[in-house]
Length: 161
Image 1 (tube, rainbow, N blue to C red):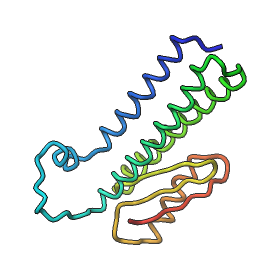
Image 2 (cartoon, helix red, strand yellow):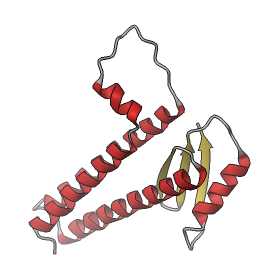
Image 3 (cartoon, rainbow, N blue to C red):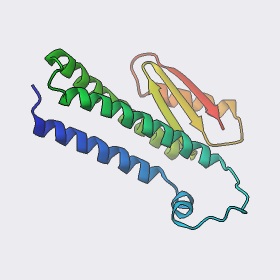
């Protein structure tokens, strides 16, 4: 059974991990845009990396929402032990999924030098590459590289934005 101290540790550690990932994934230009005063008259230019940042922020918000739901179940005194165990296992699975996403993102960044976003849902891995060049050979290489990380067959999609 999970005691409150361990639960708070997992909660705070998960929150710090997510915020750390978000901060590290933000580029210098994003940080400077957030910290500077913007004029309304300026034209906004959307770059390829902005799409990736938007996807990452959206995914981070979704993950935080799910984590909060699971943590509420864990803290709910009316919840059964089985519900709490299921919530704890789901929280662990969510954390494992996030670490796998980071590992794949790092692999693609290091090996292929592309900004990317990875989302894992079950056996499906969706990869978004920040590039206007839609190269099928590179997509196939990325799919093969990612599949080598797993023993079982995964459904991997690569999309260029």
